[in-house]
View 1 (cartoon, helix red, strand yellow):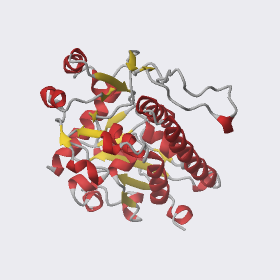
View 2 (cartoon, rainbow, N blue to C red; view 1 turned 120 degrees about the vertical axis):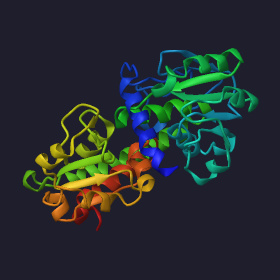
View 3 (spheres, one colour; view 1 turned 180 degrees about the vertical axis):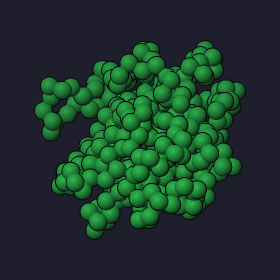
Length: 326
């Protein structure tokens, strides 16, 4: 089962790149935060019914605080649990694995969702995702026709849009104050990391290759992805300048000769570090010669939820251990 995950991950990544998105989604609630309010006295109470504009510009009205929630993608699930609403979750996708309690929840499918199963769980709210909303459109409409509220959460392309996702789900679940607290903590950690990384001189700045799917079909983090932004935060240089999640020939990686190689698929594929270190023709690369090949927790750095700030920290430790692992 583990070997299937890289393919599934790439599937979701490509869906995210192809999905239509008009910038970050904005939550619209009748009691939402206002930019004109004093930062120390934000008006964050959610009063139902609440209307939210979702990722596809649907006006979604939630009549009462949800008591039964189904999540169709792991990032949504992690957000709900971070809001301390895990006890309200009655169904999750086949790929959910964090926190550990989700392993005991009812499964509602993977790439194809089980509509009948979801309806049988009688949820008040289904949290869908922009990356799969088009392919699952007919099924989502069937849920709406059954009287179930469906909220499509934005497919975050950068860290700010991860914050949007958290705030949107916070508004929908009546936990906007908690959502704002989580976002504030994430921003604080990322700001601290960025400040520390700014001390790195241009001459000491490292070049990095981030591999999200292994050979023979290498997929890497390219420009204008949230992981590329994470590298910018830690003051590292991405060797992949192609847009999005790029398929690369091994020779292209050799030619660009990164100082550090990060893999994110070790949990699913086995010993990712040994896989990279033993590849034909890679032995003379700087990262391999200096043993600067590090596998990081895939979900922490690729899942667009509340752990993404910790993912930035893990990347910082992997690329600049002398600065961030003290």
